[in-house]
Amino acid sequence: MILLYLAAMNKGFSSNAWLTYKQAQAMGGQVMKGAKSVRCIFYKTIEVEDESSDGVLGIFPRKKTKTSAATTIRGLQRVSTFS
Image (cartoon, rainbow, N blue to C red; front, side, top):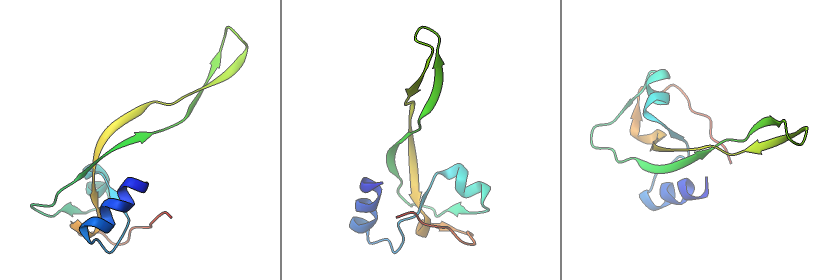
């Protein structure tokens, strides 16, 4: 989140909302031609049962993805931002 916020400030975007290409398509938007994306890593916590210790383990899979600023996507109705 911090790196995306800094990227938005550096590029002069008026919003700190970011979407992947597929998210933009699902919302009826289209990334503008020539718009540059920003690479980021998505982390998610998944809890799985550990049979050896009869407890729960938290694993953190990660996925590399590219995101585009909401201001470079046409056709979006409204995007909520996180702070």
